Amino acid sequence: MKYRVSLVSLGCAKNLVDAEVMLGHLPAERFEVITDESSAEIIIVNTCSFIKEAKEESIETILDLAEHKKSGNCQLLVVCGCMPQRYREDLATSMPEVDLWLGTGDVPRVVELIEAKLAGSLAEGETFAPPNWLYDHTTQRVRSSPHYTSYVKIAEGCDNLCSYCVIPAIRGPLRSRSIASVVSEVQGMVNDGVKEINLIAQDITAFGRDRHDGPRIEDLLTELVKIDGLRWLRLLYAYPDGISDELLDTIAREEKICNYLDIPLQHIDDGILGMMNRRIDEAGIRNLLVRVRSRIPEMTLRTSFIVGFPGESEEQFAKLLDFVNEGHFERVGVFCYSKEEGTPAYQLAGQIAERTKKSRRQKLMKAQARVSFRKNRELIGRIEPVLVEGYSEESELLLRGRSVRQAPDVDGQVYITAGDANIGDIVELKITDSSEYDLIGEIVEPVLC
Image 1 (cartoon, rainbow, N blue to C red):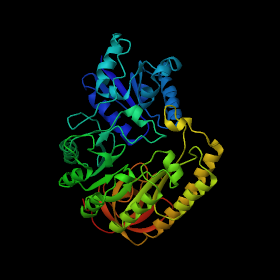
Image 2: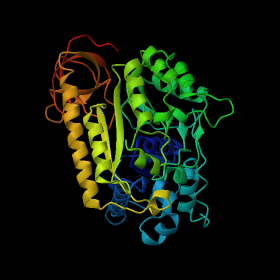
Image 3: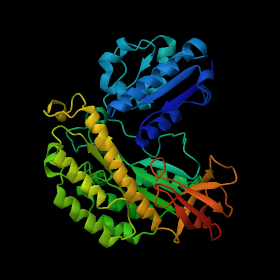
Image 4: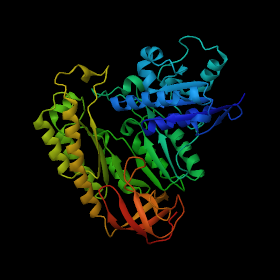
């Protein structure tokens, strides 16, 4: 029998890569991948459990999809990824709707385990391999992102041990790919028409620290920019104390590397940063910002902050709010602290009320909205390269895209009011207007690529 399979991936881009790898393992003669869950005999849910909201979304999605076992064709509901890796002891009894639980280390065994479950031969304890697997350029992937862009995971796991974070327990220690493996994968994607590569890891600046041959992120970038046809190379999730002057100089020198860095800072108060077990303080953060702006004035900076960390006083939050109001960042994400079992911060005294955390988050987001609006207004009249992604939801006559300053999935969009181009083209666009997060403009030059 040939089974129709539908996969739903939740959470971050790193999870999305895992989902694409799982789909790549499914042999076409045995499995047909479809997007309609109601028609699928097998439904796979790739979960996230990084914070409370992610766990709630995962549980809600699983229960919703489980209804297809009653009203649809679903014969096998498979749940994999971070949530079962973290809560394996509890889930089997609390969610009997699920037929098969797989951990983060089971990705390369997904076909073997599904086949065993279908055959009724899956032994107790056969799932949940240790989280030490790492994909490479030989691993099959079924890319689900648009044809012109893709994520490439350059490392797995994390050694940073931030006190609030469960990732090391779920994903294991840092494991970096070789430079040759990453280059080979990117070359293959570019050969298939991909123009934008987004490099991801829990911490891209840690790339190579675990390997005896000592590759560094700077060395990797130097090789990747040599690939003909690659237009944009974007760096996401850079731990602040790993951003060297050499890395900044490499970004400044290489035209293909986007002037864009995602640097999760989490806070600015030294007391909170110390309790978070972050390896940088306020002075180090401010020095980093000076180094970035002095070397690359056009750099777009994205960061994330956590509000309501245990013990965060009104004065410490006010300091963070003042820091955001200083206007260092084009993009900011704000998360309410999530009390996670198994993390050092779980036992800390001074837990903050949910209402207070939400209020602080709202204040921080309002402050950043004003900063973002001002920075976007400063772009009016400038000409920017824009990657055309499709048509606006408001009008099929209105193209939309992303400027080089906007990462996929997390940043705003550019609405194109004049000019014509194909989806996947990179064009020169004059910015004519803006909002807090989006830009508006007109194509002024023929297609660049």
